[in-house]
Image 1: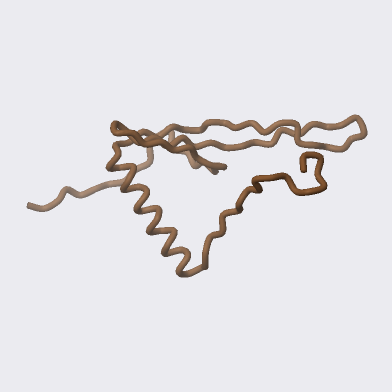
Image 2: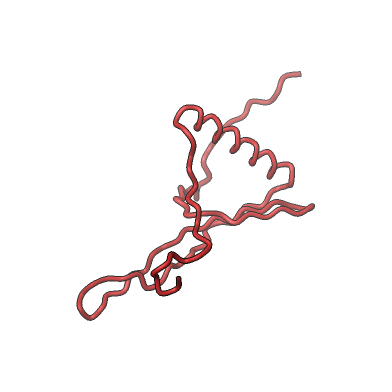
Length: 107
């Protein structure tokens, strides 16, 4: 018995999103990935200078899947990261400071 032929097509509302991050969760019933985009909202001071007023986190999409699909996605992503790092070197993830630097208003 031969396998059916797969065809790939884009949905009418297909979009490309550039995301800032994701929140993930997994329970016995489903895995969830929520993707978001952070947008900087500037404010203009009376002297004409600009500062960051707020950062808006816009939830773009929520993806639901079975635990098996969630794990499969994690494995294929891990595979691609390892292959990338073999060619281009380690992808460094910036670490966040646990304490404010000395000499700042909080340190």
